Image (cartoon, rainbow, N blue to C red; front, side, top):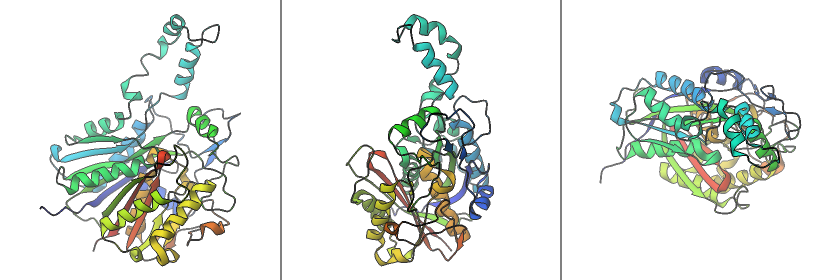
Length: 404
């Protein structure tokens, strides 16, 4: 049997509400910056939350996922300096279905409403015509982002889109790791993108009652009351060739709660199984984990369950491993969240620095782990566990470690 190949992180890139590159974003995150602001891209009057971590820069594309992902992937590829044959390069992206601009969606909805309130096809055919050239497969298909990146970067290997809600970005990285390990490809562009700061998503999350009415994302805080929607893209270039990489993805683990469409398993069993699987896959002892990049949504139930699962998996080591969440500063990117978490994990190893949980002021006693509050903490980091947990109970975890 051929030994599985090791997988190295050769380059990373991001486009965030704070900056258009990952280093510029990190510089602000380390100082405790927060991108959550009152929504200005549309009138949020009447919505359950008026705040988001939004990208306000305008792009000509109808589907905002595309420019976000392109910018992040270009940065990651430039930093990676990986040269492989087109057939040996794959693309694996976490993404949800695309949508047109909210103005387009609203226009289509108005066109569909006949005089009696019922759908009137004749009226729709007439009034929707101005929008016809905006809505096509490239906008609606979840696979559009991966296809666009493959074309731009000349990737002729496997191209895959993973759509698992909040675990999409992490699960896409898992698929890339597995493809490189078995020799299907030699390198991959992978990650996730979210572009959900729009009326449709804000209304949907509001109906579930999971948005913060105060407009504050404060994972693990005693006063947390929901999450804040964010958006952006985070990308990695992985390779079997180490090059000058100092980080490898050593372990991956996935599981399913099979408990509820939107609520997590109250015992955290699925989350714990995914974490344990990633540690086993990496052959890393829990005592080696110096940092956990938590899913940390800032919802009362999820944060408590995640901390309990972390403690169950790490045991006594949970008292030494720092824990933080990206969602306090950058909101919840949904399909891009897991990939953003991977960048936090990568930074912890390369910089020996743990980025803080913005918004966290008064830790909940039920979330008793070593938090990073205010500013980044410098500390020796050997290995990192990065968690992503999604609607439907889909769990995806990564273990990264430094290589000398």
